[in-house]
Image 1 (spheres, rainbow, N blue to C red):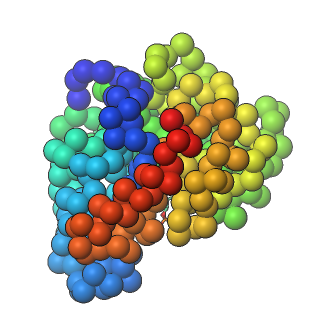
Image 2: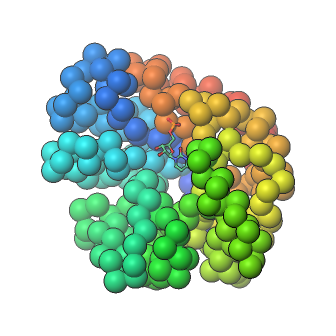
Length: 277
Ligand SMILES: O=c1ccn([C@@H]2O[C@H](COP(=O)(O)O)[C@@H](O)[C@H]2O)c(=O)[nH]1
């Protein structure tokens, strides 16, 4: 990928389309609720239909890799088409794969997801820092070299995350130390760096200092997990302008009708308007 850095490309996309990140999570139950079979053919029609309806209306489309991998090579082939179709519609693709491993294996993930010419190359991916932030180095380097981004799990939206992420480390909580490590990578970047963090919208305010991050904050949990636009304001305060609120099931349940899916995006966007930018 040539051209601008991910932080700049994301800032431009958000300025044009707003911050909402639409998730493509083909849960078998949702696929069936669209009148489709919960198999690879249903996955294909669901995922490509949702992408076609949503991608041109949001800055970021976030396919959840797990639901595609569940169908083996046929599912991964559909995922490749979703990535290509979303990018054609002008959305940035944040592939939610949550990869994390020792550095030498991380380098292979970086080749798969963050390198020009790879069939699964996206604009950004989610990564897990729980083998140590430093183990992510190959992904951070590959992303920066190719104008791509990474979103590092810091304080996730699930209740089980607290035991690990709120544990005290020498630099504050584990989650805070991850935010601080991401901030160090983003220092000096304009308009923002390409190392984002994931902070679930379901969390309580006051746990994390995000003001020095200088990078994007992916905030899943809107809708199906119970978080509201008001929660985002309370949770993120002065960092709101960096937040990408993410919603998957709460949008997708409006399908298969494309007009209804678009209306759901509009209504979610309206609920965020005035709050975030
Ligand atoms: O902390 C996290 C990190 C990632 N996710 C992912 O976001 C979507 C949420 O889907 P909804 O249907 O809007 O609940 C899903 O792909 C998760 O794996 C998260 O929820 N929390």
